[in-house]
Every structure is written in structure tokens, then in C-alpha cells.
Length: 276
View 1 (cartoon, rainbow, N blue to C red):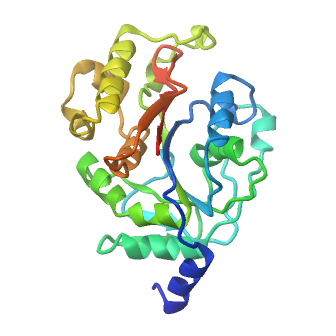
View 2 (cartoon, helix red, strand yellow; view 1 turned 90 degrees about the horizontal axis):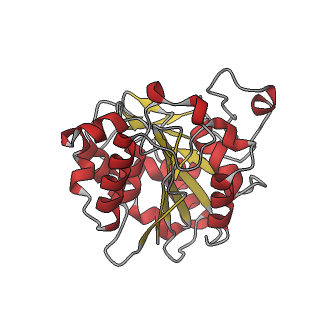
């Protein structure tokens, strides 16, 4: 239950700020956490353009739940939710603090949706593998909001809109996934080939980018009704839905720009979005 102390804490800890940007980050392989490549450079260059946040709220493709949850522990663990990678990747820790106060405020502003305060999850690689490039000193508190897999794209887009007030409290909201994400069709032999995509992936990327840049979001919300190329690009919604949280927070006066906008290994894209 949210208490008066919680509400006092959020108002005192997170003072009113200029409106924070909103991001969607194409996180790609977990190896991006420890490798040097053009996409990692893109994240670091992005960080130079961002105001210092009071906290981060991340919606990651890798916390896909029945119902909605928000992490509320003081010190979230670094979750290594993958297999088959070098030990160096499993050794990475991202010791950012959590924020029980922000978790309580998130629960409150999303009412009447039931949001469970979660003490068990932590930070999965959809969060820490990219946030570590923005804030390598882990000096910004981070919480995660889960994605309810029982709900539609329209539901997630509208739920995101309720988070708008947090942007004025210095909270940087980040969606983390991949717009084109078909792991079954990855061409590992050409993984290092620059901007390489199958014909359907090229078509899907072009179609979605046009909708993004023209700010025509309804077809993106109704992605399940789109053509075969889009269905191949989004065989499951987990990595796509974080994009809808980012788009749901865009206001008319804000600019939407793309970066890291390349295809990878035939069936993936690293396209990322900045709104401010």
C-alpha cells in the first residue's frame, strides 16, 4: 500500500524538473554490454545529450509477466538471464540502487491498474546491458516496470501515457527491446556484416521507420494487423512492446529522432528512438 510517507518521499527526493526525454533502445545481443562497436558508441553519444536524471524507469522486453509489476527493492540484483556466452559477461555487475519511493509513485499513478511491488526480480540484461553505457558509474537509481503479456498494444500505449508526470520529476523512461527481432532466422555467418538484413527485414524497417518519423502511431499500435514482413519482424511481441511505451509518452511539441538505425544478422534491428 502506498503511504503518505511514500508520497512525501517522492516529492522531496524527485523535485520538479524540466521534462526529461524518453528513449527506446535497441539492445541487441547481451555481448553489447562488454564489446566495443558502433551501437555501444551510439549509446555513449546519446548519453552526452541527456540531462542528468534523478532516476530511471525501464520497460524491458525481458520482464514479460501475467499482470503488471514494478521492482521496489533498495538494491536490485544484476540478472544474467541468458546462456552460452563468455564468463566475462556473467561477471558483469551493475550495482545501481533501486528506488522504493519511485516504485510506490509508479504504482499510484497507474491506478486503477493493479501494480504489484516486486522484491525478487532486479535488473535484467534488457536494462543493465544498455544503461551501463549511459551511466557507467551506476550512480542513477533504476527500477523496472514489467510488461503484461495478456494485454494488447493499445493497452500498453495508453498505460504509458499515465507515466507522463514522472518526466517532470527527473525520471528518464527507457523502453528496451528490438523492433525487428526474429531469433529463429538470425544469419550467424553474417553477424558482423554492416547493416545486413533480409528483404522482409528491410521492408519492415522501412515501413516502421516511416510510421515513426511521420508520427503515425496507430498502425504501430495495431502491429498484429500489418503485413507479412511486419509479422516476420515481430513473431512475438515481447521485444516490440517497449517501443509502444516510448511512443505513448510523446507529446505533440516534441521531436522524434532515430539513431543506431541499422539491421543486423539478417533478422534483427538496432534502431533506437529519442523523444525530447
